[in-house]
Length: 430
Image 1: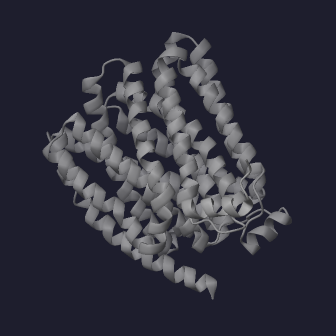
Image 2 (image 1 turned 90 degrees about the vertical axis):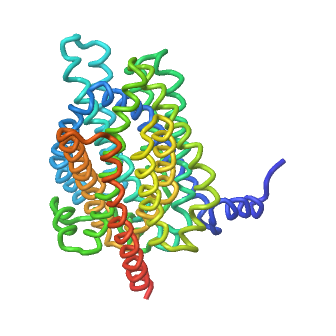
Image 3 (image 1 turned 180 degrees about the horizontal axis):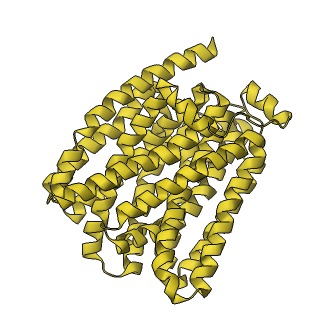
């Protein structure tokens, strides 16, 4: 039995508030994001297991290495964006990571045991950069493809593709980590990322007339290799996004350190840690799917960007308070699952809508600078703050209680960004 186009459109409309003419682009975007996040989540549990093995004493140095590497990579990435059309540079950026992963897989499989102490930290840094560059390029492309009003309706549904991909990647890792080993997992990740490249190459024309004209003429975004930095410093709006990002990443890093302590104390074996963390990922993505399908788009339309952005600060205030009072594995898992599901279902889609009202150059360069360097800058603040507070004798529970008040600043920034986004959207429409 075949389904008529009108019936198919009604189903799509109920799921993600998708309007006629948007089906192909939305589904292909979700497919692209599925492969990209499935690729990353195969590597995520491996990276986190390496972080647990390194211990909280080494994690600040791993974050520092990631920050410095990101700082070097950002101008190089911006230079590629300035010189090549969007649909040409996206495959290049992804295939650079593919080559790096294949090199790591071969080294782990055939390299001498003497390099093991260096290989783990290097892989942790690579995967941490990978986790930011891959989705940042994707969401920049989406902000350059869909109009602001479309972003509020569609980004939640598109995020479902990423959630399903993350779920698939985490599930495969939890089942295969102890059977096939890390090199095979890396090759699986590479295959999935190449599938994301193919989806990007087949994407329909943009809904934005200026973007569509640029693509038809095969023009590059243009600008300088340092525009990502200079534009952020010159824009209160972009600086506000930076502050929001910093508040999020500082809290995430503090939670990551507590993960290393709590999970490390419970599981001594690396493969067992990998399987447990992959199981947590599976729960997170499962909880996120229905929210993204039926709630995210409607919340963004009904509450607006500001109130949707405020969900994460509220969750963090409650969660860090609970973790400070009851620092058990069960409380940690509940907070981690709720916070990450809230980020995927509400925080990330709302934050990406903020970039639909900035110029094309900022969608790729400034956005990438914020998503990578500023994100990792928050990691640094969180990592060294945690290390310093631990060094003076504060327990993990006390650090959690200190992290809770940051959410008040975070909440205020969320409301301000929501107002600014509305003003820019109105100006763009006029």
